[in-house]
Length: 339
Image 1 (cartoon, rainbow, N blue to C red):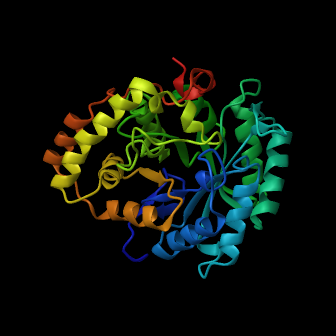
Image 2 (tube, rainbow, N blue to C red):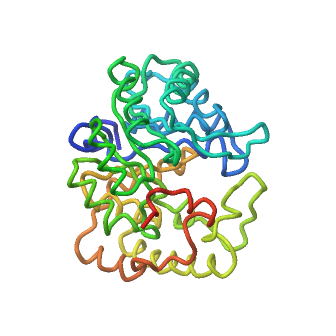
């Protein structure tokens, strides 16, 4: 598929036009174990060449490494910075050992985080800027207000949010236009459908969906005996451990039958399902290698009809996943999970 053939979608009523798939770059620097910088840059180049110009990162991915990686990839790409749409998360606090110590959404901190991101990315603006998690000590109005000031200054193009619930969506959008909410959404994680997704649609806010393959669990490539090194946080994820893993991989095998009938891979079916949930949803794929990127691109050529969707729902019914999407301590910090 060429860049001219990649369909475009608009992020909300005020956001940018972006390709129907985005590239999530987190795993190229952190949290998924060993990384390969050369292959990561080659994968970013391949994504840009294919028309996947939406690159998602966080200033805390690899404690700045991911932004530097993207900078180097853009500088060495024939496509250049002008074609890329950079979506950046901020606010997570780290210590010298890489530990996590909360989030900072104070206006002064927003300006500080942004200044460092601009420097590391080698650019004068980011296209979408969002706090990774709500800072419970700072009203969302203050955080969004600070990003709005950066928009006025020309340092940010659009305001995004991440992992927030409907009340926070309403409060934030009353301060300034919000282009999109970045939140987990997949066959195994459908919690947004009841309240958050309808609120986004009411407010004209798009969705950039991460975890569409549940961090590789429903990629069709995961195995029960796969060993993870100490740097891979999936080793602590409830869905990847014990009986939960066995149950979830049984769901994958049921999905594989649907994929086989469509002459597609499991990953392609899982991505295509998210694509089919609405033109206002843009899945982020976490490919770290060019072959995985190529497989994901194939999802754009998979058309799901009503019978296909019924078969997928039968293979992986809503709520069928075993285990929460994060460990309990992290779930407690998600504004999107508050009742």
